[in-house]
Image (cartoon, rainbow, N blue to C red; front, side, top):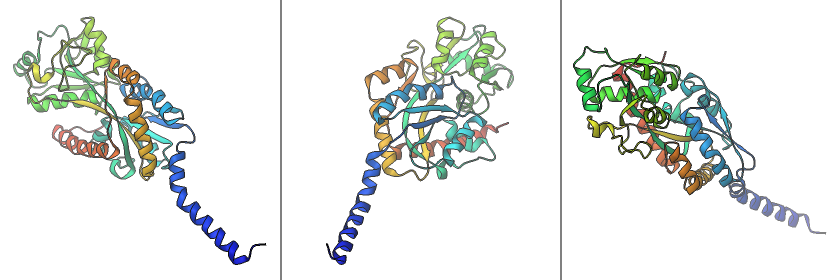
Length: 327
């Protein structure tokens, strides 16, 4: 039988070794069950499409399923608040777009603080919108459109959006800001109705997501005057950028990011980011995303955090100058 003091020494050494190994073991073991990816918008929108595009490949890279769950409401705030309040263990995440940066300026009261309650996992990609006008409008490029607007009283022309604070809306507000024009905002409950009324001429213009507008542009139901990004899109290669078509200095690109609750361990965030990058760099997923109008984008958690913080500052100024407030 071993002396008591020897047993105490062995137990102490074993406990020390266990404590020493626990963090590494926990990090290496993540994930041990499926990960929930909350989409804070209704099914069918660009954020939902992006989530469902990446979920399978990301899940395979993680070795666990990534389950997409829609929790819509309050321009994305309901779903994001649920993630902000979730246990910070890496099993409840959110995918969001520019509302993450726009909403703090748009809403007088927020149910969470982006900087305090969330941390970035990484980026998923970017996408473009496209400036479309009614076929009945007698313009064929951005320069002609601006001349047409400026020759008429302020707010005589109108643009439709998918709702106040939506990316449709913000793309148009940036257009107004850069061009110095006044165009009436008509918010709809979704991008589809806004496109329908642009086709009919109820509103004269709109900035739909490029992939959603492509069938209407190809079918000559909408005229595409320019894409919002800095380069032309392979989905509509003959359509110039808005800057090319008559408004230098204009650029608007929608980004998509993954967020986790603040307090999620760095090792877990690093694992999620590395496996996300692995998925995004696969040729199969990259091709699928591009067919849907997304450009895959890989970045570190720190790079994503810096980008989101910069966008919060940028859009706070634009929202304030335009006098926009959520209904």
